[in-house]
Amino acid sequence: MRKKVVLLGAILIAMVTFSSCKKQDEATKPLSEKLFGRWSVEKVVTTTETETGPRAVTQNYQTSDYMDFRKSENNDVEVKLGANTSLGTFTTTVDQTLYLTISGKSLVCQMDQITDGKAQFTGTVTGSNPKVTETYYLYR
Image 1 (cartoon, helix red, strand yellow):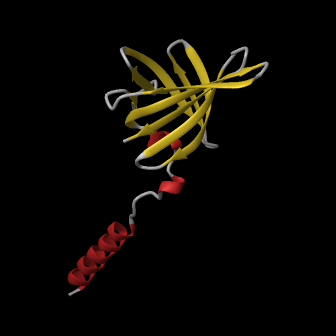
Image 2 (image 1 turned 90 degrees about the horizontal axis):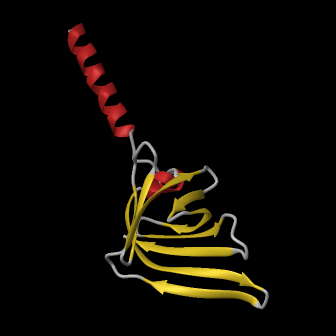
């Protein structure tokens, strides 16, 4: 009888343990976890600060153009825009800052929006003079 009670108790504890496990809430998920994977690039808006004010240029892309944020030792990101494909790296911080190095330039980015299906971030090109910012519009 005692063995049955112990066995029943162990089964009950196991059921409670497994049923209490839940998926991590999107709001608390780290930025890098939200970014991992392949995103199609809708467009990139490049804004240059000039003496006469900001000048924005929008480059639209095809569904075959992408940014692939990889879960690797170096946090690689593969970027294909038009005929050009390049490999870079990225890092993220707790405060939703994205550091991106691609195509020979470094960007310090702030996430404007990120959901399961859309991401938008604006980055300042490090060392640019005049100041250049790039806003990336991505979707899955």
